Image 1 (cartoon, rainbow, N blue to C red):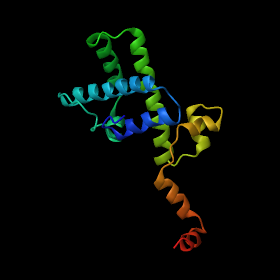
Image 2 (image 1 turned 45 degrees about the horizontal axis):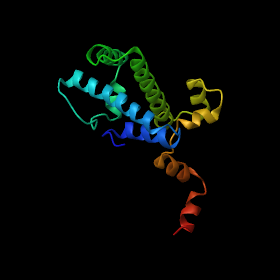
Image 3 (image 1 turned 60 degrees about the horizontal axis):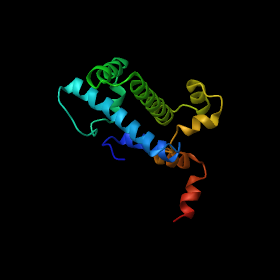
Length: 157
């Protein structure tokens, strides 16, 4: 499942492990999102690339709605994709953005889970929790902020 982009690889793993998506669906999402990244890269740097190692979080944050429109136009005109295929690509991109945005907002925005639920428009908190990954650093920070953490750490020595 390696695409060269850690963010995309994490998302595809989430689809397989947490969401239980089929291998076919994951393969289609991989193609769609990689193709978007490669298209935007070519637009910006006027050169081809075959892997997505450049697609770090900063690159992904820089993608605009106009980049997505350009990508869909490229799919329609350059690749002769049907309306249905373009629709699937839009869904794949939207879901990737929603999941990645929610994860980053929670991880770096120090946003309360309930606030995130409201932002995403979820009725149930359990729906919001599906979008989140446990960050080892965040877990360690939470453990260290526990007033009893020094006692716990000493007892493990």
